[in-house]
Image (cartoon, rainbow, N blue to C red; front, top):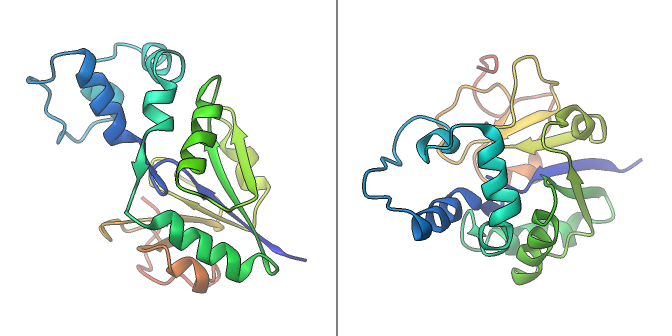
Length: 191
């Protein structure tokens, strides 16, 4: 049976946060906003409720935010395509993203713009994390996805190598050699 790897789109492949800031600041005065705060983007931008933030992202601006975002790192989709080509007969690779409404076609546009070759794209509702975990053998996510007590098959992609997650990788090439029975980095428990 083929191993199934799910890779989170936002935060790992797509840098949507920079685009959210750019789109938001094109409509509002951002001179007073400190983007270096250690807070959720929703709070930094001053949205009073999660519903207001979701309305901005998924109803008002999905094409501008999700469709025209950039890669998290230049050439990352090229790396993903190479990984896919080399492993498509051994590993089922799926890109997943929590999307609603027009963010779905915007996401497909993003993937098409960068020439993504992965066959399996999975959209799931905004808060249905367990659905994704149940469908894979290995789940590559950013730290925003992680919750306490998550399954061992959840691996954090830590670009800055600053977290103390037990299961983590720090670059895309580590996915090739990752064995979730032996963490490659810190022996600590997830935060």
